[in-house]
Image (cartoon, rainbow, N blue to C red; front, top):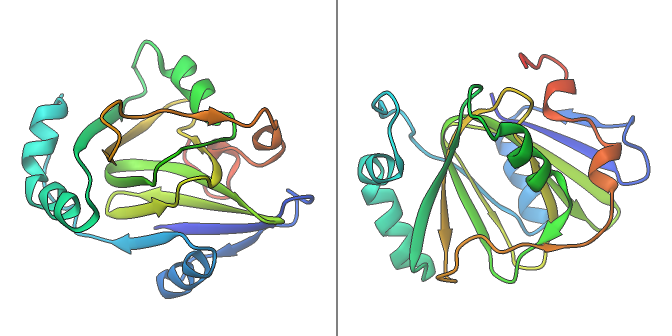
Length: 186
């Protein structure tokens, strides 16, 4: 189940947990973040690579490209046995921004997408079927946990793909990680 955690940015121990999808959408929309629930019920072949995943979700990708002007899409997929899982986790945990909108459609598993907006941190525990659209310049980080299991389609207008502008702020280290959330299986 998708869950939103709403924290004051100065009090990571005072989070409010929201599980109602309409309320999650409302809170995120008020913060300028796009959030939708889509059907991610397609079965991915064992060990599916980027091309296979993009083919399975081809109509979704094509629609997003048409509607939002994206030029390229890729897939990030990590499993608990990935040899570079610790390095990837560290890379995404540092607060950063992008010069373009960041759009992710989770097609498998889950991850924690945290947004630092004004004096709040909004932690979206996203799962398969969640599409999140983060406007350019929004401070954020992503935690896949110590034993990652997720696949997400990423869409870009920049042909270079994922390019981060790190803020240098260590705020992410003060907030609960994916494996520290209530009810987390990691």
